[in-house]
Length: 258
Image 1 (tube, helix red, strand yellow):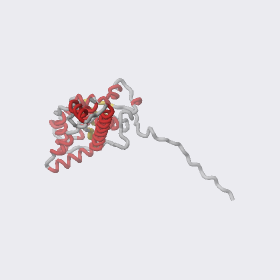
Image 2 (image 1 turned 135 degrees about the vertical axis):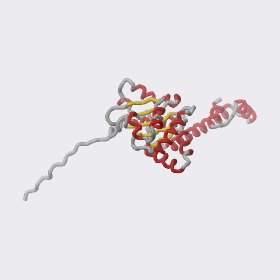
Image 3 (image 1 turned 180 degrees about the vertical axis):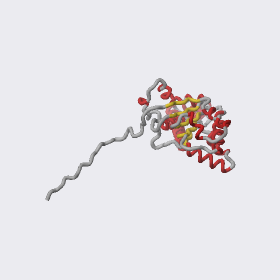
């Protein structure tokens, strides 16, 4: 049973009856079967590790020092809704096809949480992809200029978890805005588990300042938050919390008398 399970994880359609027949023909004893099971389990584990490593590489998430939920200091988070933030690791939004917005000042942990969500997705076999808002703008501008943006749009629709960091760091022109909302629209219609994570220092009410288009197009922003969980984060910056800070003072040199 363990062998067939491991074989399935390797993409092999091996029935238990086939294994029993093979064992009988090869006159395998219990020890030989255990050895075979061990080999298959090892191969399945290596295959899983390779798949995750590939997903992390393609996601553009940091791999040397990955941001994880375990590495986030949740003790800093207070308030009646703090528990909801801690539950992000369950990937409920992914399976419910709900978006996530993390909004608050610099250094409070928005990007850490967004990256941790993407990392957890990869660990569970879901593709993730992260890019800065400025990178997204440049990517969409290049696609619009090419006259054939389908490939770029498809690459942004495909990941189960798409993370756009720092909305508000740049302004999208009309062409980029059109393509951005095309991505939003297509992801909205995906039936498989998926989520879109957005981080920003600016409240949602100001987001229309970062996109260019008529009123109808900007109403598409409503679709961004049609099914979404928005976390309004407040508090001091967490950056520099691990620094060793020393206070030193220079004093005048002693004057030598001749």
